[in-house]
Structure formats: structure tokens, C-alpha cells
Amino acid sequence: MPFVWSRTCLAYAPMANGAISIGASVPALSGAKPLAAVSRRAQIPALDGVRGLAILLVVIHNASWVLQDSTRLPMKIVIATTATGWVGVQLFFVLSGFLITSILLETRRSEHYLRNFYVRRVLRIFPLYYAFLLVALVIAPRFADPDWAAVAHKNQWWLWTFTFNWGAPLGYGINGLSHFWSLAVEEQFYFFWPFLVLLLSRRQLIAVCIGAMLVTPLVRLGLRLDDLPGGAYEFTVARWDALAGGALLAILMTTDDGRTWLAQRVRQVGLASSVLLVTCVLVTHGFREGAFWVQVVGQSMTVLVFSLLVHASVAPASPFEVTARDALSTAWLRFLGKYSYAIYIFHYPIQAIGSHYLADVVNGADDSWRLLRWALYVVGVAALSILAALGSWHLLERRFLALKDRFTVRDTEPAPSMPPASADG
Image 1: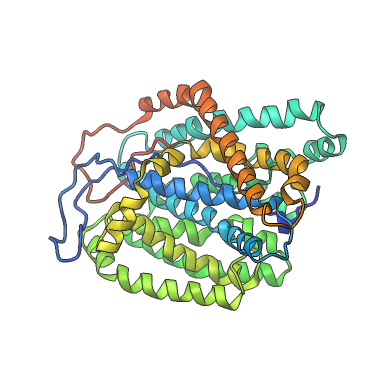
Image 2: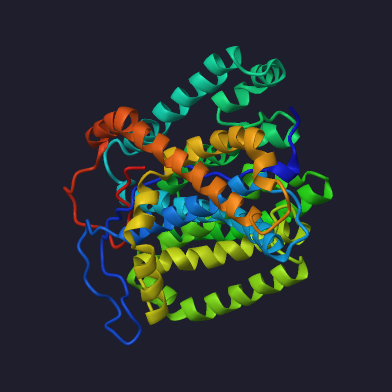
């Protein structure tokens, strides 16, 4: 089945858990002492909350593809608002860049640096991912629509090889499984980034990140001019800025000077990026992922905003950031964050099946009850996804995650001057 741009779905890839190791001090609040001591293995619940917020945006966005156009103002607002939920995937990428780079910086001088990193990634990602593909691509086609089964058989190798983000925009997608593009982006990031962190100095890594953030909008511009909007959304080279933005934040937080610099400029950067983001929304009459200037410029603006959100979760430098951190630390967001990987795996197939059978029911008459029907549908998709995720966690994932401790760097050296992530991801 050819890739359909208007139905591009959002997704995310698994990363670390909400824990983050603090190797040194971080700024607390402006006006307080610049660097307050924090334990090396401090737990930062807000990072699970960031992940929970991201998966919430993604699920609501993708479940809302069931909606058709409406003439009523309330539904018009819902359709326009949920259409912006694609930013959830951008938040995942920024957080991933931050956490993964933090892990790598913490462990790059340790024994078995590469082995430990890749084995832990495999234990986190592969069991559920390949178990799902086994069911979806080997067992399900025996009972599915023959046309769908033929397309799935033809295009399945893009999924098995984590290259789906390159195949789908070129017409090699699979209906119901198109959310796996972002996991492919993540896996490709995991493949090469550890080597750069190992080989380059801190200053060189900063230059690489800044260069990627500046070049990526031009890459997206070129892809759009070449009539590849799907590529501008899904190709790995079109997502470098999000991953690099998170990575840059992690690198800057490896030194006292970097953390102080960030704390002093959070307000200015936040204000400037917010103004640019609002301007982009107004100019494009919304913030839909397929809009030309949203892709070229808007994605970069979200990188700045979400980098500041991650910074607020780790090292709040103002009362506003403390409030954001506390909001992200709520139990329900942390719960969603904990199970977000499996929720991501299951939610889109559930939505695709639900949409096939219930789209007419949800849309029905364009009356005041349609809003309620949509809300119930979204809650249903989310609830089934969470139930599937809980089952997956207890029956499969945690058994493999228990093996990860065998590939963990022990605290045998002085803590580096940084806040690295202690990933379960």
C-alpha cells in the first residue's frame, strides 16, 4: 500500500526510564546558589512525566485520525487541536537525544562501553518489537484481508531491518504499522552516535550538534522542494535537529560553566522560541505536520521549546521551570511514561482496527453528541493500549530487562561532572 501523507502517524522509540544519574551539581533556582549538590544516582520523576506527556500527545493525535470534517465549531476546534499532536514525536526525539547522550558521556571511558550500550538497547527494544512483528507479519496475514496481507508481505523487510522510515515515504508502507518509522530513526541514531561520543571531544560534539541543528531545516527544505513531504517528516536526516538538540543539552550539562550558561539564558531562549513558534502557527493557520513552513521551520522551533522542557525537568532555573517540573512529576504522567514503549507499539494497530469498524459510529451525525463519541473512542484506544502494555510488561519485557544489570557500569570511578541518564531504556 503506498504511503499516504495525510495519514502519517506519530510514534516514538524506547529510551531510558525516568531515572537520571547526577554526576555533579545543577543550578536550582535563579537567586539561589548556582550549583546545588545532587547525589549521583538521584531519581528525576519529571523525565518519566515528559515521556508520559509525549505518548499522551501521540495517542490522542493518532486516535483522532478517525474524525472526518465537521461544520460545527466545537468539532472544528478538536480537529485542529489534535492535528498538532504530532509534536509528541518531536518531544520523544529531544528526550532521547538528551538521555542517550548522557548515558554515553557517563560511560565512554568505561570497560565494554560499546558492548554494554548495545546489549542494553537490544534487551530493551528487540523482545517486544520482534514479538509484535512475528504476530503482525507472520501470523496475522493468514487471517487478514488478502490485499493487506500481500502489501505486508511485500514491504515487511523495511520493518525487520529498522529502515521503515526510508521505505514508507517512498511508497513501501503498511497500513496499521506506519508508526514504526520513528523507532527506525531511533535505532539508526543508536547505531552511529556512540562512536562519535567515543571518538570526539566535548567541544567537537558541541560543534556536531550545532551543525546538525543548522543543516537539518535546509535538508527538509530540499526534500520539500523535491516533492518528498513524507521524507521531510520521516527520513533520519530530517530529524537530526531534534536528536542533536537533546544531545547538545546533555553535553552542556557536563560542566559547571555549561549549566550556568543554560540557567542564565533559559528565559531569553524560551521567549524567543515561543514567539517564533506562535508566529509559525499564525502564518500556517495551524500547526499541521504536512504544512510547508511547519516542516521547514516549525520543527526546529519545537526542538528549542522541548529542550527547555527537558532542562526544566532536570535542573529548573526559575519558578516557572519548577512549576513545569512539578506538573510533569505527577503520578499519572509518570505511569504513562513507564509503559510508554509498549503503549506506542500497540496503540496504532488498535486505532487502525478501531477506525475500520467504528469510524461511521464515531462520526455519525454531525451533532453535539459527536464530541462525546470521539472522546469515548480516544479513551477506548488509550485504555486498550495501556492494558496491552501492562500485559506485555509483566509477561515479556521485565524478564529481559532483568538481564540488563549484567551490562551496567559500576560506580568504581569518581563521578564525572555531568548529569547522565541511568537508562533502563
